[in-house]
Image (cartoon, rainbow, N blue to C red; front, side, top):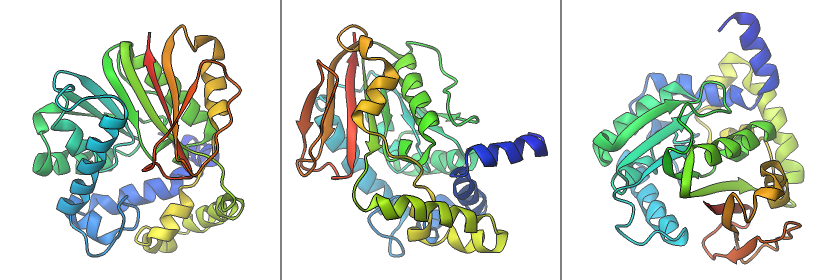
Length: 288
């Protein structure tokens, strides 16, 4: 990529600055060191953690979400899937133990290197394929080729346009009868401060000396990565309301009981699930 293209990319995707910084930081670390020593990894705590505990938390969520999404235990062993936003493999390891084929997709190539390491230690490496999402918005996979498309705590870190593009890509690569389960973050009262503050953090992240420090601090990383908030109506409109009931069947918005969800689209049901974060929601649908 030329210098001019890199500058244009940073201007168009400012949320990618902390993401790339995390990737650069990870180049010199093992997966276990990344979990212990960086602030960007997704877990309930940092510091006193290990790769084993990191993947154990992901395995627990894989089991729980597959149940919520209607996959009985043992029913996925012959299926294929893509995980959009695998990171270093917190949940990927669990998926590889349950699916025949798992495409781990991420915008950062170094994350995918660490993902392979994570799965080799805590998953089933023969089931893993990695996919670099170089442009941040498309999946280099054949159409109608997979049984399941999944994304968790990733689409909120993309620009809104890129998130919507990845939704379209998830639908494109899923075959008839397959399932998509995509996680989003909706607006909360706290976001009135969090989203602008995230922009300020991203500006500070452009200073190289600060970036090395900030990649180690969880709260700064979390703020820097907050890029969009999309409602169910936003996402359903981007898909095309005419597809609901024709191309898409059993369309469900899965949300927290603590959050009220309003929908303009007909033929979409709502499902309240206690373990869903109040600020999150899921698009769950089966392709006709």
